[in-house]
Image 1 (cartoon, rainbow over the protein chains, first blue to last red):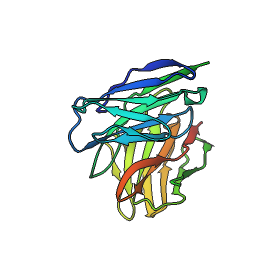
Image 2 (cartoon, helix red, strand yellow):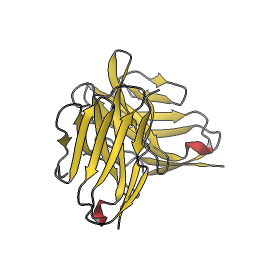
Image 3 (spheres, each protein chain N blue to C red):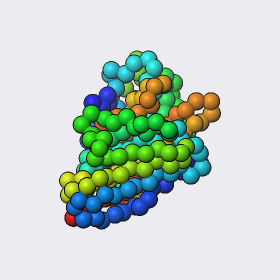
Image 4 (spheres, rainbow over the protein chains, first blue to last red):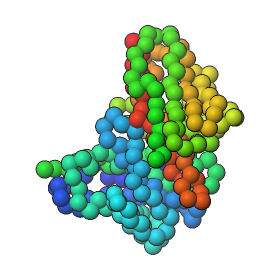
Length: 111
Length: 118
């Protein structure tokens, strides 16, 4: 079973920040939080990942709570091309490295 | 960098035939590849983990004799759907685990293969 829960859908106005929450209350100390997105009929695209600290790259920022039980993916200036299903995944730092996908959040960016 | 390709992108076949799907890491070596299946409006479901030079590890409920996986080199894994039936129609996606910096990190995904069994 997936170890993450996300809201099924969200809307965001174009140009505004999109904040996508993820709950991973059973996460253990040796598990990373990964975010991917999937645009219709394509393979998932890597966005960002983190262990304890907040992370930022050219695509997004990842905010992880101090107790690590939840996180938020932030797209600072959403565009229409950011419309996709966003998946939050927890993954062990060693071993099989396999992902178990949850249901994800369907983000719709509105013009 | 870290590009994964799949071939074919789309295949239509008759019931009872076998279909082979290739997954290649184009610019890196992948000791581990993964195969997923995705039905319409559903999430990705992990089918199996494929390690180069060894037998694949299948997830619970996935028939290993139905979905044959071969990982003969560090850049190629194949999934063969044997005796395909209409219920096997799905979107099949592979991924490869890539090394970034000093540790192996995220998976990079292929574009997927849409299989339709008539």
